[in-house]
Length: 188
Image (cartoon, rainbow, N blue to C red):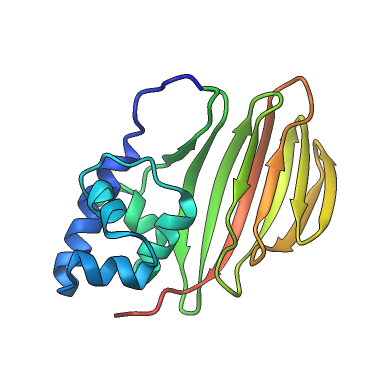
């Protein structure tokens, strides 16, 4: 695995997480228990020293009554933010836009996977789903016992409660968009 400079998102997460936790009056122990993460991991995330999974960030945001976007963006910013970086510099995920609605949140993401690269996602909370649209390359999509091969121009929609896996089986760059819907976070 090659080393890349840390993503800027980790410093945003560290600041936003600590500020939200302190505003809510939660100790690190209580937040860690609520989000089902170890206190040590939470300490590392608040220090900006942890390469944390998207699923863990989702659980922390939910435990604080925040949207995922509120946790990962620079304070006061609506700019796109690179949230995940694979082993290859060509493999990454960028949150483009988030729209909180009364009963759900919609997110628009842009993804790229280098040839042969993959991303394994942990299960999302109940009620979450997504639609993917492939722009270029081939996406091998696995979810809930289904395996789909999607070429440029193809779309698929599915629930993400059982986890899912993206893989680029081709020899060229895979580019696709994700539109995600998730239940609105519970206010604390």
